[in-house]
Image 1 (cartoon, rainbow, N blue to C red):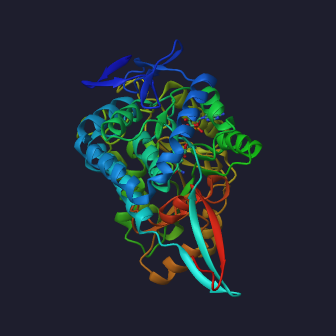
Image 2 (image 1 turned 30 degrees about the vertical axis):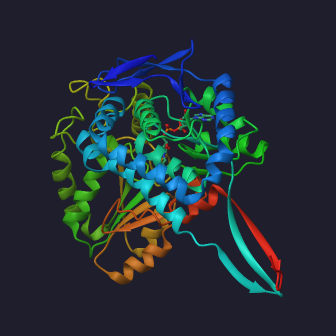
Image 3 (image 1 turned 45 degrees about the vertical axis):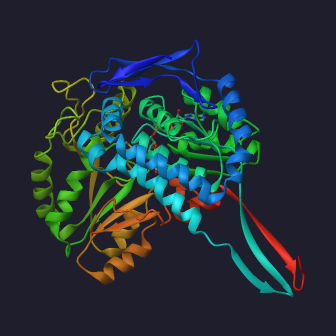
Length: 485
Ligand code: NAD
């Protein structure tokens, strides 16, 4: 087996198909975000691996579906226990590969992977079929597992996001082929080891490593696939949606965000400013981040003073150090992309009021926390997702203008609202176009609540029954009253 030793942990760099490791001649180089040097050479899948993996998932499907929710739940719970037992190894590898803060991975992000499997295992078992009488018949709605599902995930929080999408698919009775992102493929390889150790039947869970346009495109185009679940950018979603449409296969897309962070004069300004400065954590590589700071005019000076004070406290550095809050960007191409946004903003006449430069003194992929006051709301830096440590700052005069600004982009994934008024929270909360809006808090999640985006931020919903329904074909069984067995 080809493998790499990452942070002292041996990680297979091969695919995982039908319960076996599968290598191949072609590889791609996975870079370390810490020094932009090669971390591992990983198998580079294409048509052949897509074919093998979908065949394995198709063969395993009837047996997995026949286990029923309780039989599948036993496997998912064992897997969750193994994830909990391996937090240290998973966190170490993910931190080296994606440069997420090690302490967050240890304290909550990896554990959330285990929680995802437990939550969906239990939800599928607890599900009660809808049954009612009408027109002299008994109506019964049955969830039928759909078949092999392809899951495609992005490079940020790769372990957590892969489990978030895989758990409902497996709980609903689908088999899975996962294609992790090529910039952070390693923690998902460890997940394969845990799946194997927890005794899943071969072919129920498969991983094809590789480049999006190769492995990803081959998997999404495969006619044997019955569901496609994607998290990534709206641009890639167009390709995935097109492939899904060709085979008339449902797909969901959890896509990019450009969330507003609204601060009203009646808010706890200190809490709001601290949260705003916190949007630079993990170098802003967070889809749910509130990247457009929208602050009521009357308090904008006091807010900015606090915001700068809290932002000054940030420490750029190694994600494994406890003091670090701002990590490097994932890849040289991503750094160039982030930098391109800021340079175009500068050229366009937007004001860079803090940051706006690389920090090569810390490492080759670091970028300074940056704040931009745009020339107008049409500026590219306001309208497009940067996905880095770059925030914009604008003011509003009243609630109507606040809502208009919040709703002025094509995105609608999430938002954050700071106010001291319950009535305002209710009014503004209803008016802002976002799949999730947090009021005076951030990132608190109930896994049974719907999760997804409006506009170009998404199609479909994950979370709770919404995800279980996506991976199921709903059937209505209609039985004439008086029919006896
Ligand atoms: P991306 O769209 O470039 O890639 C995502 C995945 O798609 C990768 O695995 C990639 O290999 C694959 N891919 C690329 N082209 C493909 C193709 N033609 N066919 C099939 N697969 C293909 O996104 P990224 O840069 O990895 O991630 C960042 C984006 O993800 C940001 O927009 C971010 O906001 C978004 N995101 C959204 C959520 C959410 O829950 N809404 C969560 C995390 C990240």
